[in-house]
Length: 630
Image (cartoon, rainbow, N blue to C red; front, side):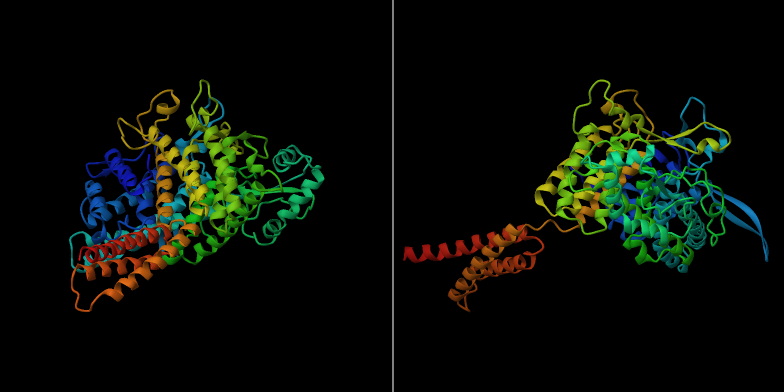
């Protein structure tokens, strides 16, 4: 299936409104019920492309494209599309905000306390249901998804406020009230954004282990790909990660992980995000919110999945678009600096670990084994995701990308994305029900069971990172391989989309892996498909790869064509107003454009020069034929 971001996103929007927008009311919930994460994912299916892709914006009513107007017509026309979106955002904030009264010098005042409860997304490791206190627990996905949602909402609201203000000055009915609602909503979304940033800061963790411990042996089993003595590997790892260790020790001062020894030279370490705020994490004293001081429960060990999720959210926070729009206040900028530091160090750490050593990369030794001894192809895919994000933000070498391409292909085969599913295939469980992550520390909440977080986004993670790798690749052959894999992965996802009920949404894994069919949409997976389509749109916005051979060929054709053009112009009389003059003018125009494009699009320059050569040859032959007939 060809990846066509515009058509496919509009298809999702059409299906989304059919499933969720009834008689002017937004209907929350899907297969996994309604919670702060699922509802954010549902809303981001619409809002994320609208704020990340040029041409999809909904904040300027007069600039909305005709095909988008048609798809969103159930929400209204013109500026009422944006007004409806404001109402949906207000509803989301109201659902996941606790309002309390506080004393101020002016008297009683209402104060927002954002709620990040994972609710129905949580399950237990045994047959006992989570207790209410556990359903109320936050997870890193809560913070990261809220971070992305709040940023997207602020981008929309800041852009939409101007047109609404213009309408208000013209006394358009409802516009004055809408303007005030936007201003109030902006403040409430900023409060949620700040809280989400605090949660991410306090969920970051550094874990140090002794090499001879079970955790250290598990780490060394991945790092030591040559069978070298353990002492030599520990020393080499320490040298490779020395700068990361020093910065973790000296620069990460806000909410440091307690009890971590980053001075011991013989210790191994890892960093990233745990599943929620870490037990005994230091309070953040400059933020006046409960989340800045409340006790955490999560074990002080990074999880690969939650690390990837956090990095993706922070990537939206540090994007050029966010900086250009100046969305953050002073307090948020301070938190953003802390998050960007952690984002940079986590990416450097996992990128270095993935490619450690002079021989085979640890990442090439599939499946990845985590420090707690768990193994899964999904963990290899997660490490690949961090590596791609790191390479995307630095100068990636073609060697790195050429080696990464076969890894993605192998992961696609092992995950049965491009290979046949067999009877009792263990790969099936990675997609349905998904990989189960034990949330150690969650059993301390209300005396309930140990909780489980299930991830079933293997296919979308593979697609998104393959598209990112293709965008980075400077080698024609590697890019072609990666794009072919991306197309195959999109084919796999297309087979899992609904054909009945919520047509065009996801996910019906039974259509590929068998089992019980489902009828309710999964916003978890649908939102991640949308992320992939946004990544594809970004890739298509980039200039195509430039082939040196094509550039040389274009220059050769241009040289010949320009010489022949000059010869024809010598033969042309100033009084000649025949079709010859028009033909020469067209050839000259093609050659001028070909020369402008020769560096950026040499293939197009070759085509233009070839057309000009053909036209010049036709003129020369016509003159020769006329002379011969005389």
